[in-house]
Image (cartoon, rainbow, N blue to C red; front, side, top):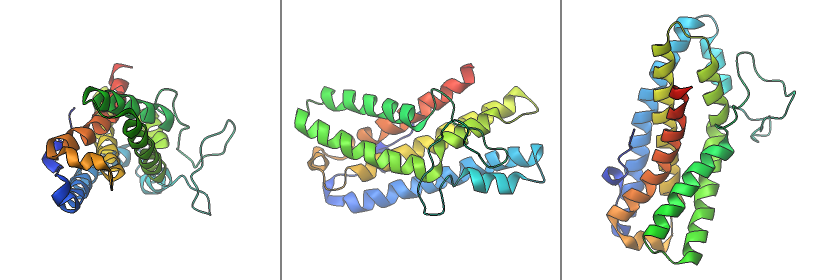
Length: 208
């Protein structure tokens, strides 16, 4: 799956409008992705799906702090702990590595690469934690399904949804960066590196 970051990119002179377009893209993808996921849950768990979805989307304590999983931690009913290989750490590593390779291929100055990757990592972690991505992946994947096709549909939807989330986070991470002077095509490709990396990793669940 490839997310078209270039289509929502913009050069430095119109960066404000570009950010608005990435948010619009994310909103459309997010809505389209969540509908099938929710429908799948309703088919399997009609009495509890709404409550489960609300809990899965908010793994925060009463102070609004994200709750990383620890062994023995009590989770809301129906929510699975993060799966090895699909935690925030691994999603971040995938996006980080692909973006680093991209920046090196573009001959960006090493100091600027480090600065850019720090900003990217920060935005990605914040975005992942806000949505409880690692819990969502584990839960939607491990829920019982009536057929393999329904599980595949959930995986494909997650790849699209969370790939778009990473794409938006990458776009926001460039706010104020001199890399914006590289132009529209660079901006779009930069966003797509994170979106595609996260999407591709989630899609490997289809091989399990």
